[in-house]
Length: 145
Image (cartoon, rainbow, N blue to C red; front, side, top):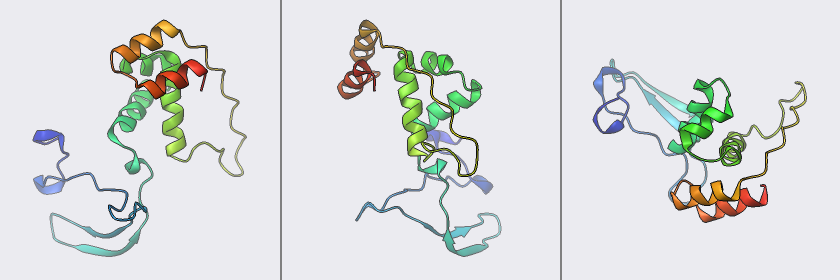
């Protein structure tokens, strides 16, 4: 990582996260040109965007913690400092944004999700008071969504 938290590309060039939506109409952007910073080679065309690149930074953090913890939601909960139902809800939101809400075609059916344990209202209110969740998320968690 370079100073300021931006990743460094090949050749020490500072790179930036590419926008994923059009600032004019909010439609999804596509990549039209790629370039090599070492030799200057450029490729033009219509390149498919990476689904993971469309996630915002908080979603990427949740996904990284989940993967590094080998799928342990309790580790995600501890890292985020939120209740188990909140951590699980955030993971499900990330999966939905990635388009993984449905099982793979032709593959085994998606496993039936384990029931989310009821939220402890005191824990949810503590998360809200600490600013780890907002009012809408607190309401959804308490309703069991």
